[in-house]
Length: 239
Image (spheres, rainbow, N blue to C red):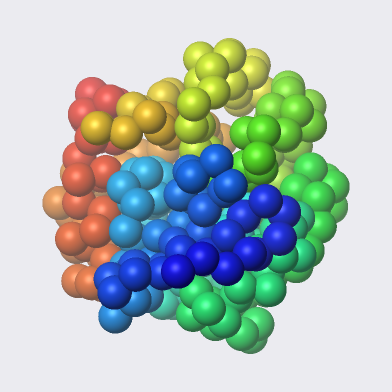
């Protein structure tokens, strides 16, 4: 079953999943219908491995809401955090209830707007920033350049961390710009069996706990989803 969502995206339903897809057939978000808070798409779990580097964020920013998988996860499991999200596509925002994204409250705010402008107004705000901003043509040019990554760094707190999804783009070119913006503090982590890579960048000098101890600080419903990403990121750090 298919219904249009606007902006070239559509919903696809079957007995197990609700999916937000681009007209090209690429799945932007997949939700398990009887467990809407589970991170079904593997790269979303890898992005949240950034919690290994910043385990107790007070304010989390999401650039690109989509079907809200990471927003829902953070709102449910990171009770100490306030979540702010921006989405440019009104058609995608109209699907908020379909994807069980909670209404705005004291801990969640979702707005429509341009991600680069949104970041520019939030200097020094985010302990954790998750960037997953895609359209029909991939990542928009103004969300790809050095100026954009400078804005990402400026939007982070002194110990803030960001994670960005790269799908079928030149991730190494993005890494170069991230390295420039963050004075070399970044790395790329390929997603096993997928075409995604996740870029991580950070301020300060993270001193993460061993993955098993870091996971212990999360609710048990979150641990099993993030365990693999924590260990792969720790391995990439040589920890």
